[in-house]
Image: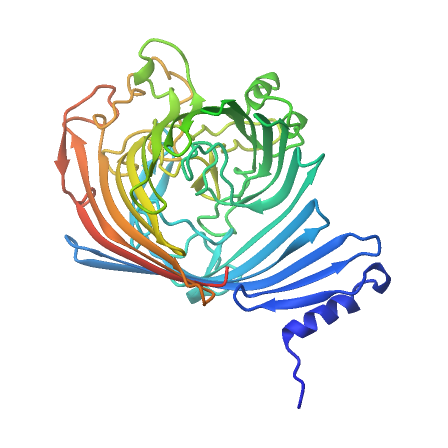
Length: 542
C-alpha cells in the first residue's frame, strides 16, 4: 500500500533536521483531531523535558440589527484564522505565540464633532458603536490597522473596518516560575485583567482593554499576601491610517498592586498606576517604587492614578464588593460638583443560586465621573510636542468599558443546564453624557482635556449629572447560549436581544455651571432608536 506523507508527519522531521542532533533524545509526536493540535514531546541530553503544541483554529461571528424607527438594517461580521505554537521548557518555563488573519466589517455612523478643549480650539470626529452589535460589546480583534479591500495599497491601511477589510493580530508570551512558585514572571503581548473582584469588573485594567507588550511580576511570600507589578508599552490608535504621525502618543503604562486576605471572609487590593511618555525612567521600571509618589519626585509630567477594592465573601453563598479608581481629586468646597474630581466608583454582589444547576447572579452599579481616564496634553522635556496621556490603548479605554461621564446598572444571570452548555441573561441601563452636538457635555469622551487653569473657580467646570446637557439613556436586554459539542471540535454561540435608546436634554445651555430640569427629546442629532440585535458565531478548534 502506498504510504502518504502529511504535514503532521513532516513537522517532526523538519524539527530534527534544523536542530542539533546531539542535544536531544528520541522524540515522539501525536495529532489530536478533537483539539486541532499536533503535540511533540522530547527531552534534552541533560533530562530537561520539552513539549511543543502546534495548532490552528477558525472563528466566525455574524451580527445583524434592525432599527425600528429609522427602518434601518445594519450588518457585520468577523472571520479569523489563527495559528499558534506553544509549549513547556522544563517544569518552570512556558511559551505561546499566535498569529491570525481576519476578514471583517463593522459599520459605524458618523455622529458629529467633539470639542476637545473648553475654548473650542480643537475638535475630533465622533462615531457610534458598531451598529450591528450591542453597545460597548464589540472589541476589535485586529492589531494596529486594517486594509480595506477597495484600496489595497501602501497608503490604504486605516484604523477601522467601516467597509470589508483584512486585519491581522499577533499575541505572544513567555512565562516562568521560581523559588517553588513564590515568584511568577511573564513577558508578552496579551489581553489582561487586573484588580477585578468579579470577571470583567475592573476599573483599572479591564479585560476589554486591547493587548499590549508588558512585563509582569508576582511575588507571594505568604498565602495571604502578594505583590504584583506590570510595565508595558501602549499602542497608538491610527484612526486615520498608519501614515498619520503618532508623535504625540508614545506612552508606557505601569501598575503596582498589593493583594491581602485579612481573613477568609475579607479580601482587599490596592495600588497605583501611571501613564508616562516612553523614556528610560528607572523609577517606573523598578517594581518596588510606588508610581504615584514617584511621579511627584521627578516632576509632574505623567498621569498617575490610585485604585482599591474590598471583597466580603462567604463560601457557597457569594460575595459583596466595592471598588474605586482615583484619577485626580482635591478636597475643597463644592467637592462633588467640580469637574476636577475625576474618579470612578463601583459596588456589586455575586450570589450562588442553589435551586438552579451551576447558576449565579451578578448585580453591579458603576459610575464614571467626567474627565476620568482623560488627561491634558502635557509638555514633556524629552519630546518636542505636547504628549497625550489619556488612559487608553489602541483607542480603547484601559479601565472600565464605559466612557467618562456615565453610569451603569447591570444585572446578569448565568447557569449551566448541562455539560458544555452555558446560558446567560443580562439587563443593562446605561446613561452617558453626549460627546457631540450642540448639547455635548464637557468631559464625556476619552479625548476630553480639562482646562489647565480655573478648575475650582470657573463656573463652567461644574458637573450636574443628567442636568448639564444632553444624555443618552440605553436599556439593553439580551440572552445568550454557548454550547460545546462533545464529539466535535466545535463551539456554537448565539445571542439576541433588544436595545432601546433615547436622549434627554436640559432647558438651558450645556456646561453653564448650573443644574437644569431635563426632558426626553427626539431630534435628528439625538434620535430615539429601538434596535433588534442578533449575533451568532462558531469556533472550530480553540
